[in-house]
Image (tube, helix red, strand yellow):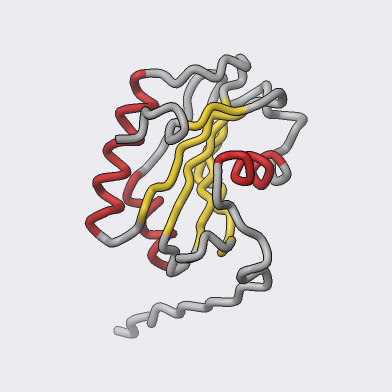
Length: 145
């Protein structure tokens, strides 16, 4: 029986050039990588992967859902962050309704992810809820514990 070897490739064309050091920069980065034709149609979740200096490593499209929910798999987020050798991550999702207020599920998931990421020495810096008009930062508002 032949067993496949796992290959890891790491090429970063943007290393150190693009940063997300605060919620405003993270929002700008996220909105620039969002399909504006569907931001008010279906919920989507992305992960911004950053190095130790908050330089962009990449943006991972985690999932697309329906009008009110999207699947967020913590194991998948961490596996992608580890493969990318990311030191910091920011979770971003949209609310198609335009309401930027986080749900209890948003806050609960964020806190579970923060604890899980910490165990593998990855920092969850923020969780942004976005719309065409603006964003809500759980870190800025004190909802990231």
